[in-house]
Length: 229
Length: 402
Ligand SMILES: Nc1ncnc2c1ncn2[C@@H]1O[C@H](COP(=O)(O)OP(=O)(O)O)[C@@H](O)[C@H]1O
Ligand SMILES: [Mg+2]
Image (cartoon, each protein chain N blue to C red):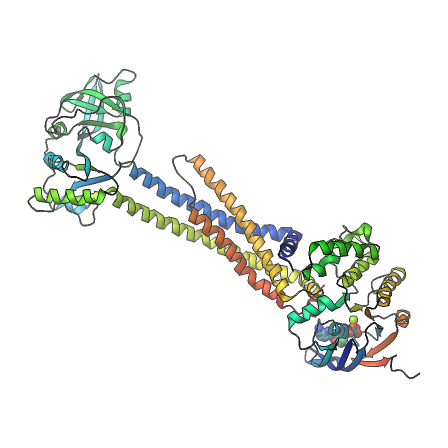
């Protein structure tokens, strides 16, 4: 059974009196454990797709089944639970809470989920070690380098042990070297069985993924899974 | 999210914006401090007046000549009707009543008092031995008026502390002869200084036997009859019984007015209580204003932190969690403001009491409780709207603001 099944997804935005079809009749299946790169020109609908997959946005039409369950019809509360338990986000601009330390930022999803402090502490300590952030636990985001910030963000995205990680241009704000580091981290997670979907402009990065999707005008222009040959 | 986490999160969020946090805490604390100080003033005034009236005497019932529907002084009576006089015998008859402990007739007038070339104007109160205990006066030196036939009147006087000072200076006063009007009287006692109270200034008073005073002022009437009831419970009985008895003695005509201290007290109590309430109400307006300020501050916080709210939602926060976090922050702002205001108000009331020691400026408990709970309630009430707004934000739109 596929982890993600999209069929006939439409997402329209009103810009003044013109309608933008950000996603246009999209059908897509992604299996659990896959490593998918989403590419395409700017404005082709990559972020819109990712937001939809992450239940941050709802389609105007079509159905989205996550782990066999139709999630578009869930109430906002139920969607929040799915986001909390099953999905981790990594953003281009890190999105850390500036007043919280690295450790507190990593613990945030567990705090929101109501996990007991003792367990939080233990899991954060483990994550800090896993992501090489031991010495940065009490640093605020503005005391961290870009690569360290993104590592904190990835630690945060994985702390609830989600089935799916969505990364929207995770290396967009990093130099090549740190970017590679971050990609390796994400790929290591994928090798442990987490489904990984990465939006990227970088063809080299895209080529590393097991499956490439190329979008254009809200449609799938190319899907390496169905490509001839 | 756990409650402790919600509170800590709200606290850190509030601490992250020190200026706007300080501003709303300040507004709230001023509101609460205003309630505390103003009610302390109002209630202090009430206590002060009540205290003054209570010092007139304990369980006091007062008979005055003339009929008055309202139970108070009626100027019309003084001019138009000529009520039957109150006499010494009227007063004496009241002593038989079972509910009455003591009775003192009172005749007053002004005269001059002289000794050794010094001369002074003074208020003369004609009464009996019971007058001093009924009015809760105390003697500094000498003895009270003799317990004699009320119609006899020995030539003796008790003088106030200030009179003694002005006429005798450092010389002993007791035993000396003074001239009061055209009489020569022997000073047998000196009152303890009391200062200015309601009614008369006892420090400048000359107390003489009642029949002597009547002879001096050439009158048979009494100004008042003071009655002390057996107990607080006996006050109404003392009132009706004396009214009944005097009516009988005046051939069935109800031509006197009997007032109780309680009635006077109750009136003032009510009046000044209402005043305090009104003042508290005015102060509460500043609380409401503070509440509105907290609301605006929180609305600004929601806009400022839209990106953060979006992030929290992306990380799995439910609308309830967001709502609670913002409500907790509003409650914290107003709670700390209220507490600070309470301390500030108590400090202000303390300063007032230091500056005016006679004035018991204590805020009443009800005002403190009402002030604090209004502060918390308005803070929460006005926190609901911003919290709901935060909870309603679309995650994707909010995230884009980051
Ligand atoms: N909230 C929005 N309101 C209006 N238009 C939007 C909104 N989000 C995306 N769009 C439009 O939808 C299209 C796809 O956007 P997006 O998914 O962000 O593209 P990409 O991430 O591939 O660059 C663009 O034309 C963009 O202008
Ligand atoms: Mg994009």
